[in-house]
Image (cartoon, rainbow, N blue to C red; front, side):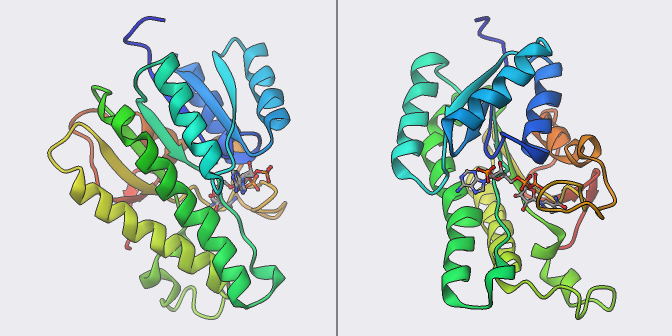
Length: 238
Ligand SMILES: NC(=O)c1ccc[n+]([C@@H]2O[C@H](COP(=O)([O-])OP(=O)(O)OC[C@H]3O[C@@H](n4cnc5c(N)ncnc54)[C@H](OP(=O)(O)O)[C@@H]3O)[C@@H](O)[C@H]2O)c1
């Protein structure tokens, strides 16, 4: 491996927006490590991208598993010694199961605590990159200002999902303050309403377009922004 080669890890990359982020980063020449909570799913996704001449590799990574997180960090350190791009893309929407504490807890585990634990474990490797980029896949529903606006009011009844994404946003801002003055940029991303298993068939955006904001944030130049929340290069309100 050329030491200039970009190494990217994407979570929840076996399907949907995550797989497409892997594809688009891979087309740009990155080595893409595709995380999935079942190794067979990660292997199938990597094989698909390899058929497209992308350097894609599978990794078993349930973001709620501290064992998976520690093993992934050790593997990336041993094989590459750095990580240039981390896309915390894995996410879950559980509000259809009910409005209760169990749903809230499980949503926070996947959408906030998993990305937090994974990022903490990988931070030394990201800081070893000359241009580390962390992208937290959020949602416009995590924008408290937006869900209280006339446009959204009454249409965003998904407390566990919105709280978990708002918390992800707040943590993104905190992390950007902590990493200020380093080579690492961290931003939150709203992909759009995208036709995936989560977004459903009525969504307005194709997956290719839905991956674009995260890919842009993952490949920001050194004078690019940090500590923001973006959709299609436009800054969103927190
Ligand atoms: N689609 C939209 O309209 C939309 C809008 C705003 C934000 N988003 C965000 O975009 C991200 C990707 O969503 P998507 O639309 O591509 O949905 P998707 O097709 O349902 O993909 C979700 C991915 O997350 C993975 N995942 C769930 N729990 C996990 C865990 N504990 N550990 C590791 N991976 C886990 C899933 O793995 P399995 O296959 O094993 O379940 C799957 O790979 C999510 O963070 C979502 O909140 C989507």
